[in-house]
Length: 154
Image (cartoon, rainbow, N blue to C red):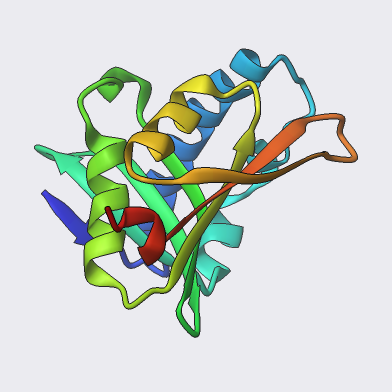
C-alpha cells in the first residue's frame, strides 16, 4: 500500500529515519564513502522537514520512502530509499510512478551518486536522462537526472 506519510508524527518520523539509516548505510558502502551526509539526518530533522513523504507499506512494515518537494511545476526528489529486506520488489519504481502520476509537473529532477548504478537504472527505466555531473565537497561524483513531458513523448 502506498500512502502519504505524516512525518510530524514521532512514530512515523522514527520509522522513516530507521529506513533511511539502513538503506543509506548500504548506499555509502556501495559508493565507497564513509562521510555520507544522508546518514547524518536525525529523526527531528525529518519531523521538521517541509518536504512531502510517501511510503510503501508491506503489511505493517514501512518498506520504502520517497521524499520530494514541489516548486511551481518542478518536482525534486530529495530521497528514495528502500528497506534492504525489500530490495528488488519494485517498490522504488512504484513510489517514483506515484509521484509522477499524482503531482502537476513540467520537470522531475533527482540527484544520486554516479556509482549508484541501481538508482540510476531505476530512474532511467522511469524515463529520466542524465543532465549534468559534478563532484561534491565530500568527493562523491554525483549526477542529476531529469524527466520532462517531452522526454516521455514518442
